[in-house]
Structures are given as structure tokens and as C-alpha cells.
Length: 133
Length: 133
DNA sequence: TGTAAGGTTTCCAGTAACTGGAGAGTCAAT
DNA sequence: ATTGACTCTCCAGTTACTGGAAACCTTACA
Image 1 (tube, rainbow over the protein chains, first blue to last red):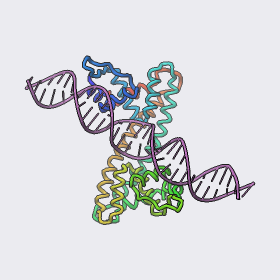
Image 2 (cartoon, rainbow over the protein chains, first blue to last red):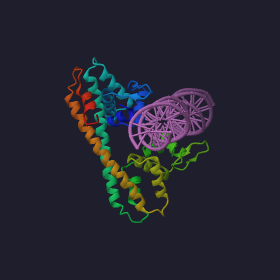
Image 3 (cartoon, rainbow over the protein chains, first blue to last red):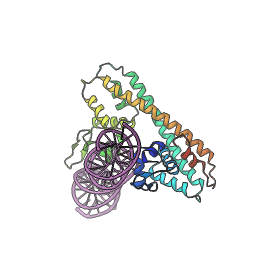
Image 4 (tube, chains in turn yellow, cyan, purple, green):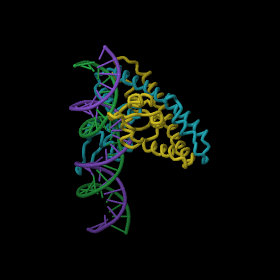
């Protein structure tokens, strides 16, 4: 499997697939005689794992940590659970924030009629709401 | 008002406040005789506006755009609305994704009992679920 | 008045996680 | 044979900061 097929299958840009091997997040793939990288299902599976973990909010460093657990059968699943739990709390927090932002922006857009008034409430809202200032 | 007070009031790190002036996102603040930056309520308000816009998912470039609208009374509020609407759709999308990730990770954490089994379902879940592969 | 703590300055370097582009080689099909 | 798509390496740039060093300023306290 060539890099573009592997990348597409894993749901990642080609550049990113190369990058992950460059930084040693995944092991360097084997090459054809011409020097093309080749990927098997296992490699793609690992890339997809990383993509998903990244989408879950895991940093590359944490992906590395998870992959080491993934590869070292001696590590306990409690380790993984602890890491995931921490992430979970962060995701929940981000969700709450995002909901607030969404509701607020929606409200402001709603109030801003889209006409040519120069005193758009979106701008005032961004500046004033939520007690920053 | 010194930079740390301004930064605290606006809800930004000091470094970031300096940075925003460095890149010309806000105008350079006036200085004391000793060279200390001084901020007034207007400057802080603008910084808070930027912080909030950033939290709303606006990039620095978009903040610049919004600030220009903010400062140029001749621009129509429809412009601002158009920009904000686009952002709103993106936030909604992000929220949906985040909810999926949250539910999924929660489910996996729940299934992973935290004992020492080496076959933690979190890892299989990250690798397998959601049809990436 | 001395001094110690803490705030501020500039500058330069580094971070995360890619992303873009040049220039050259390779493969598949017409 | 040549076109077009794909791949290679390498290096540079991106975004939005963040960290650290070395020096200067301010304030409080003894």
C-alpha cells in the first residue's frame, strides 16, 4: 500500500503520515526498490489509532505514551485508564466552554440584524459580555 | 495601569499582551519615563475583546478583521455578522465532534475497569471504533 | 539608607504539530 | 514516448504563543 492510500485509509494527510515517522511516533515504514514507503494493515491501524487519539485531544507526547502501552503488554490497563480519565475531564470542560461560546455567539448573531448599522451588537458583545472586563 | 494589571484584567498572560502589540494587533501602549508600558481602560477593553474573540475561535487574522470593523464605523454590521455566522457553524460542528469523542471515551473508560488486565478496551477502542480504518 | 523581593524591559530561541514548496525521481496509461 | 499523477528529500514557514537570560525599576521594610 502506498503512502497516499495508507493516509486516506487512516484519515490523515500524506505529509502528516511522513511526519509521524520522522518524529519517531511510528516506526519507519519499509520501502520499495524505488524508495517508496509501503504500508500494511498494521501500520495503517496504528496511524488510525493516532488520528483518533489526536481527535480525542491527546497530544503527540500522550500518543507516544499510549502507543508504548499499546506495545508493551506488561503495562496495566489502569495506566491507560488514568490517562484517559484525565483527558475525559478536559474534554467535558472544553464542551462546556464551547457551549457557552456557541450560545453567546448565536444570541449576538441573532441580535445583529445584518443591516448596515455601524453599532453591531456582536462587537459590543464580544467586548463586554462575560465579565472579562 | 501596569502590564500585569492590564493582563490580569483582560484575562491574558503578560507575554501575550506584549505579543499582541509586537505583531501590531493592538497599537503600542504609551510608556512611563522608565519605559514601562501603561494601559488605560480602553486598551484593556480591546485586549479583553481579543481574548474573547480568540475564545470564540477567531484566529488572529480574523481578530484583526474584527478590530478593523470595530474601529472603522463606516463598515457595515452585516460584514461582522457574516464573519460571525461562519464561525458559529464551525463551533457547532466542533461541538458535535467533541460530544462524540466525549461519549465514546466515557464509554471506553467505563468499560476499562482499571485493573491490571493488559487488554485495555480503551486502546482497542481508539484503534478500532469509528470506521477510520 | 540599604537591601531584598518582585515587576518590567528587550531580545533571542524554542515549542507544537504540522504545512508548503522546490526539484527530482517513478509509475501507469495512452 | 510522453503525459499526468504520485513519491521522494530537504528546507523553510506557519500560528500563536512561551521560556529564559540579563539588566533595569519600584516598593516595602529594617
